[in-house]
Image (tube, rainbow, N blue to C red):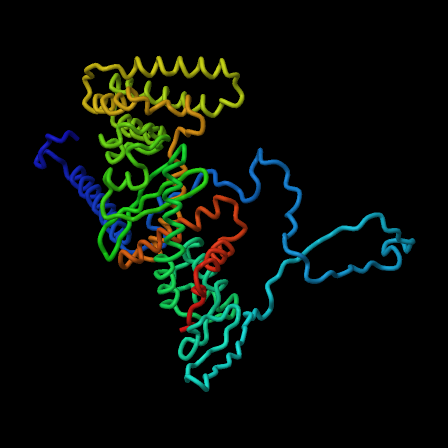
Length: 463
């Protein structure tokens, strides 16, 4: 039936069929409306696509990762050695047994009832008979003001473990006291931990954090990216800067070149790896060598290609192939001779320069890609990873260091004030840097730092 046909020209059977079809469509639309209403409510997996993955990966070692031999033995010294017993004769035939070798197996277990180590100080308080001055006894680990309401305190190991759980592992601060009590038997309040973090951020932790910021400025390559944050309910930006030796975060209400230059100055002598954010392309940073993330560029081009057809796809398809060719060349650099690698680089640079030459394209989206990416190539920001050692073609490293912060953002609702934001950036920077440098434990690294503080600032009242 053509759409132009009027209802008067329809037969009774055709009208019935039309009504049934309309009823069917109404039922489908009502079901879709109900599905959309349910999707507006909080779901267990709000970002799920609702489709099962066609080829889910099986757990365990993947092909190409080698043969699994055994789990490594624990690094801790054994607290107990048990000798396994063998029968006097073979259980199968009753023959005599002869030892041919000895195997070693271990079982690592938590204490059944973990108890903290409590040190009790008996502190004599004396008074001078001549002048009346009171003199209080001293001892290693005893703070001068540890008396009265603050006589019962926790040591640097407890505080280091608490801050490692929050700033490194990502446990919400409101849950840290429960975790500590469950695993160690130590009781402490959320408020005490927060006050200690704020105080230390203004002391030794803050001082070490500032040293890390200075260290990043001297690194040969810096990867940077940012994500959203909130401070006191206001929108802010959490910026991450990653090098081979350090990871530094900072939180600011704006993301301009001024905030970038707090870490990467205008006279920075290394290479800045980033996306195409305007803050990194400001004229104040014109003298800084840059590498634009090829993964971002490929995604930008692919996004334009999704809406193009016919000849309008030619520019984007060719550009994507050239960018991917650069990635493939970089990954194969170890297997190529120096001459082969340099030849590949030179040929790719020539093809990319020709493809991004200045010209007028009919499609506006393609023209925008040509103008934006072409300027970056003219400045040498696309293929710098092929000629400068240590520069990577993508900004994946900066994105990885933001993942712990993104998890913390979801479970902690960010920072209540600027002091809390500063404490988060300081402690998170120290924790990630310690992990980067191969420390056995963030708790050990923080404890060592706390013990170097002046006085006995490593202790805190229990309540």
